[in-house]
Amino acid sequence: MLLLAATPIGNLGDASLRLRETLAEAKVIAAEDTRHTIQLMRLLGIENRPELIALHDHNEHERAAALVDRAATEDIVLVSDAGMPTVSDPGFRVVQLAAERGVEVTVIPGPSAVVTALAVAGLPTDRFAFEGFLPRKSGERSRTLRDLATERRTLVFFEAPARLAASLSDLAVAFGEDRPAAVCRELTKMHEEVRRGPLAELAGWASEGVRGEIVLVVGGAPETVVSADDALSEVQRLVEAGERLKDAARTVAEATGLSSRELYAAALAARDA
Image (tube, rainbow, N blue to C red):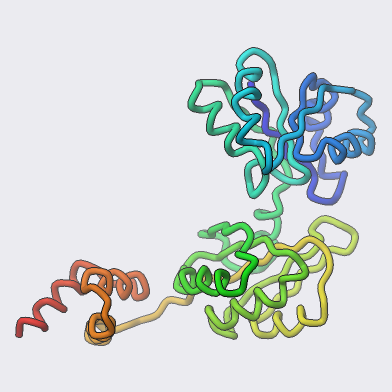
C-alpha cells in the first residue's frame, strides 16, 4: 500500500508514535528531500536505513507510475519536508494514480500548517478554503484576489516572507483595509508568532521585514444586504458596460447571494417594459 505520513512542521515533539514506528520499519520511503528525511530520522533517534526515493515537484509526474507499481506489491511510505504530503507538497499525482489503479492508500495523520494556523488565528473556522501560495507577480496576484474578494469563507494562504508585505497590501486593496486577518509565523517553533489585525495594519507591520515560514489567514467577506432593486441596477450597469446579461446576473448573484435566475428574469422584464 501507499502510506502518506505527516511529519512535524517545526517541533520534533509533534512526531507521533505511529510516525516513528512507521519510519523505523519502512523499507522504502519516497521523500520530497531525502537529505531532510535522513536528518529527521536521525533527530528522532531512528537507526533504520530504508531505500530513499526523491519525489518532488520536478520529477513526480515521471516517477508516479513506478511508485504506484511498487506500492501494489510492497509498502511505500511517502513524506514531504513538513506537514501532510499532497497539501501544497508532492504526492497528489501518486495518490491520484494509485486510486485509479486500485492500489490501497492510507494516511498517518499528523501536523498541518493549514489547520494549525486556522485554529490559532481567531477567525471563523466553520467554513474555510485553502488557496495555497498566491501568484508571485503583482498583476496576477491582484487578479486572483479580485476573484476571491466576495468569498464568504475564511481563506488560508501560504506566503514567502519576502512577498508578505506586498501580498498584504494587495489584499487590503482587493478585500478592504479593515478585513480581519492573522499572520502566523514559525508555527510550533521557538519563535512562533501570531499577529492579528486589519489587513492594512498588518501590511504596515510586514513592511519592516518578516522572517520565517508564513501562513496567512484572512476573514471571509462580510454578509451584505442588497435590495433587489439595487441588484437589478448593478446588473443593468454591467450590461451597459458590455457584459452579457447572463454573465452580469451571475456576477451580481455571487456578490449578493440573490438568485441569478431571478435577476436575469427581472433584467429581461425591465428591458422589454
